[in-house]
Image (cartoon, rainbow, N blue to C red; front, side):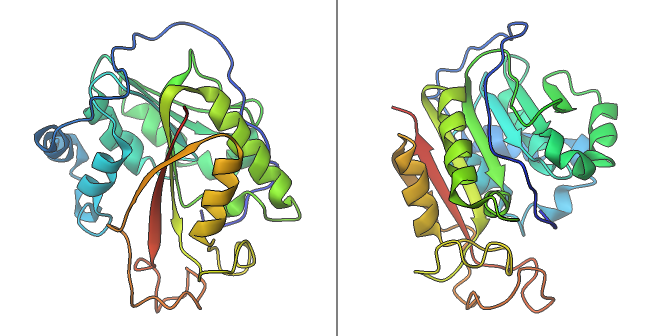
Length: 251
């Protein structure tokens, strides 16, 4: 996210029409399936970013596979939504969701994503700050957004509300994936607004408090040359920050 978001204090589950769900959360896509999704010619406009963003490693880490239902929360330009669409296939579904408080971030990417006509993607700005999906999902996935939640005076209460509601939105055994810019150990939430970074240890503590079990991490996005001192938009480090990938599971 380029700017802080406010009011992202709750995610709740709202029932609507049923989407076919075949995935049980235990059968991630194979490397060949991920490679095929990345090689889709309709992604030619974004494929140039795949190596820098370590797309194959990130998708593998999510555990998404054929039939998975995935929420891409605050999906930016839809980069991950489009890849996940190919990974989950026609029996899965991807919900690219902006909360009402983040509507301004959807002004350009939402119509562009909808215009692609991806049959297994629901892209929308929600009428409230609550995630609305047809049924509990397999995966909630958010990239470079978590650090925004406590900003503008919202504090830890906002983080607690987010994590508790994500827990409610997931199926038992479902995964919560948090990817964000790392801050130095021991900094907690002190850099979330000034540097757009967050201490991964703080993320772990907050998510575990909501009832999740820690399920692993990946160093695929790590950069040991980033000393964590700069704002992530500083030209000296932008696009090359040290990032963490954490996975939590709902028991």
